[in-house]
Image 1 (cartoon, rainbow, N blue to C red):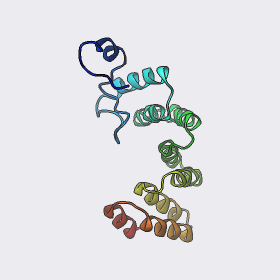
Image 2 (spheres, rainbow, N blue to C red):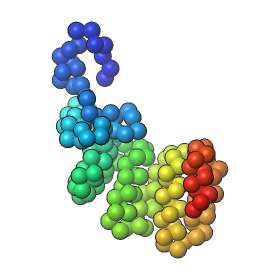
Image 3 (cartoon, helix red, strand yellow):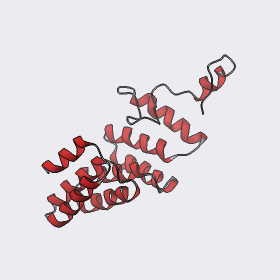
Image 4 (tube, helix red, strand yellow):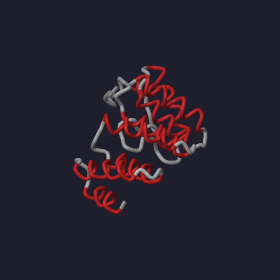
Length: 161
């Protein structure tokens, strides 16, 4: 909800405003303000549950080392909005941390099927396929990434893999 700071909306800003949570930005919370962002995102999902808020909560929990709870939030994010790619990517990262590379690939492939212009997804998939010795799949994803609308910097990173 966007409201003007005109004095009439002070109560709305006081009750629902966010200072640490940044749901529409790439970094969804201010560094060093994770606890405040967690409070703000939890308040947001009480008003209107969203995959974006649950994904941000999961990122904070992952940073705190609470991987089990992070996984629960990511699964909830997927159930709230199955077509949002970020929770799948973060489930992939969680699977990597937990040593479940095959499952990580499943999550990253799902994310890629939803959004094909995120360079990190290609990079991570190539790395995972190579780690598992599947060079054909690594080559397929690499070629797909090089044809995708991703940054030149990311394409250079893919070339080095």
